[in-house]
Length: 240
Image (cartoon, rainbow, N blue to C red; front, side, top):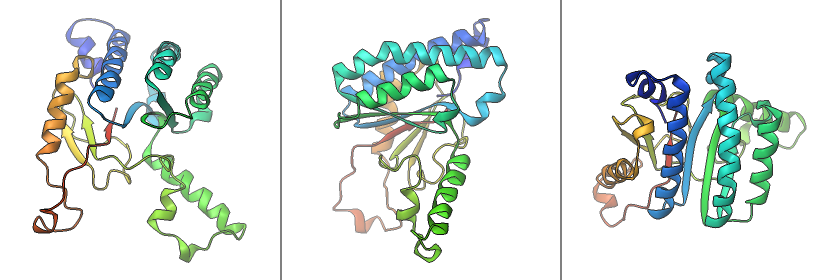
């Protein structure tokens, strides 16, 4: 979800106004995903690198996150959407972490619609954390190094409860993953939208889906081998 700052700069507005408008785009995207039948949506909201931004901007972002969670809590229950969070959640401000964990617990019984928010997330730190967890299991005799497979390692990642993304949408024309789901995105299709995130709307979403529908996902096979298979509804992720 990139382009908040540039959106604000083009209008001679403070960066934080761009973030506020970005929150509105988040709300539109969640509604559109449900309307379009997307069962899993992951939003890259705050990276481990974002702590390097000016302190007042980081504080404003945390306040907006807290406000967003309070506002959306009722909607999550109305729409029966399960909320998850990936990243080093324990490092978030206490007030934000407590609210986030409360909503996660209260929506855990919903199964049809799933919203995952990446907060204080970075794929490299996620991998390091996963390897450390596995190493501890080896030290304590519950695992063997020779027994490590991708399927097993994936269970130690933050995303162990959600499917790998089928489609990653990157807004504002940026052509990089920015440390987002690097392992999980191994076979994901990538759509780069020129739209700055605050302007991203349902039509932008539909454009990404239409692009996805033109792709042939071979997973190492040939096109001929896939002729009889149909393209599944995508699992969407939007990196920040």
